[in-house]
Image (cartoon, rainbow, N blue to C red):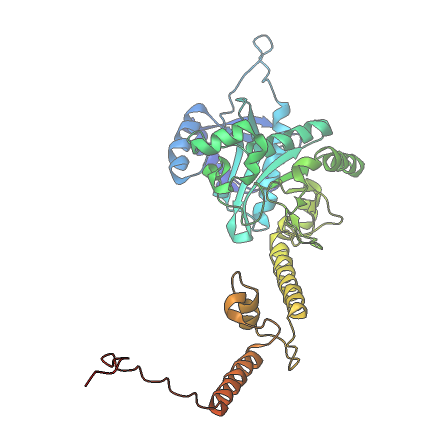
Length: 397
């Protein structure tokens, strides 16, 4: 509801006290620096769902109050430090203009096919900042680096799921051959039922924000994520017969960026504090999520390759054009087709002559024939047939 480092916001404090009087919120714990962690009660959680979920805002799971039956001590207080880090991350994003207060959601579940639910610590939607949706995992180095690789794998698997009402033919094809999901458009997958299109290639972006740890530990963890999680974040080569294509296919990858809460606090979430797995150096968030070597580059390179190939084919065809044996000119495409088409030899005439020379040849042949006919002597007329009534014998007197 407010930035955690803002300790003098009386309006927020008074609102929380008023909500507490109505049994909608309660104090979970008090940190060493006297910051209070507030959570919704069961009643407040129910009212929040009625208020927000019709607007498309998912509410996190209820944080139930549980105490030790013997000592009365509140159980699971270690959650509070993590919750404070999550809230601080959201506050830094909001302070940088990345996400409205109602654009943040915590502990959002993503159910896998095995019924396991992978809960994202934070989900942010900030279309005005160029981040339509992003999942965040806040790690205080309480988890092993390989555990984070497992989380990455689960998000990757979740992004490849089909909804229960998916087209039967598509579902059967994917069931019989799991790699077929790579050819299923993202619009037909489960994740698009929950989140808007990201505006970039690939699955929903994932950010790891490290807090309360050392730079060396962060570097070691990122190295493990890059190496052991390569299958899930790395792009692939485009399936094309063109040579010289340097663009990469990010369509099936999870874009993964990393940073630290300390960097966000010191420099701001809108500064160059985000590092994309597979790249060196740090960038601003939108630059880190963009793929300059992705589909835009591929379309440009493919268009250039198609144009070059077409030019090469045209040059080869031009070099293969027949040459007229009379005038030395190349055949036109029409004449070439006439002399090479199936059955064309019967009507095309002399296939060694171009169209003009063959027309001249025909004209000359007709002229010669006409001259010969004019110079030929007249043939004598045939003798008339003798009278049929004439007798070979003389009549006697």
